[in-house]
Length: 259
Ligand code: BTN
Image 1 (cartoon, rainbow, N blue to C red):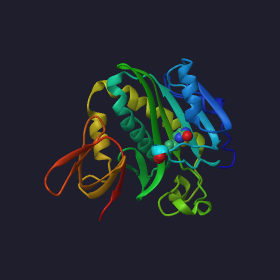
Image 2: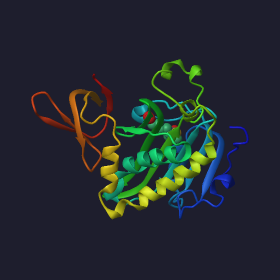
Image 3: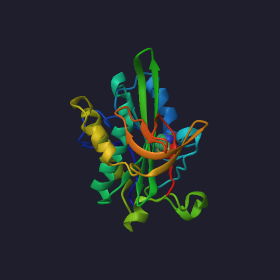
């Protein structure tokens, strides 16, 4: 967007949060915000410190994939020090924060594809990567990485032309990255601070998932499962019902629809 220049000050200025985004480290270009976030966390950065990049040259996706992160999009990582019990809930925090942010900024409805992709009209608009370091039964740090396609020139990326979308493509006009980032930080903090109050985040996350009740194929590590995506558990796993009636709990993987 014209005039949509990012800076640490423009993101933090009068931001309505207590800690997430109160310190922002901004880079015009960077290998990956995850790398810097990890270094900052290891040096004891304040909880809620956010690393933002205009462009990433080695954006990281889940399952060792590459995340395309050219200029014009949102790429950020948030440093958190959660209680161990809340670690599995961070996928819920992050994906619901993105869904709320997209609706608040653009009015568009989005859904979550297990475990934590966000789709609009069936196409991926956001990817989330959560990395953590656990020592014994203590979380040393956790990092939520969020990449939102705001103005991705999809014609430049034929490999993802059919599976991806961007906010400006869906809306038919430019979208302010600054508004997306600021709203994302507000929503992330709201969902994160809501964790101790109980199971409502789990229920909202479950209800926002696109694939429940449908026949899916799940690739998890070297195993391929097929069945009906029946539900998800409170620790974020997928429950898959097989044709013989048995149930498998899958902790992580990639889902595709079979219909
Ligand atoms: C995925 O869908 O595979 C996850 C993509 C996560 C991308 C974000 S962009 C900000 C942060 N920095 C990275 O290198 N990756 C995450």
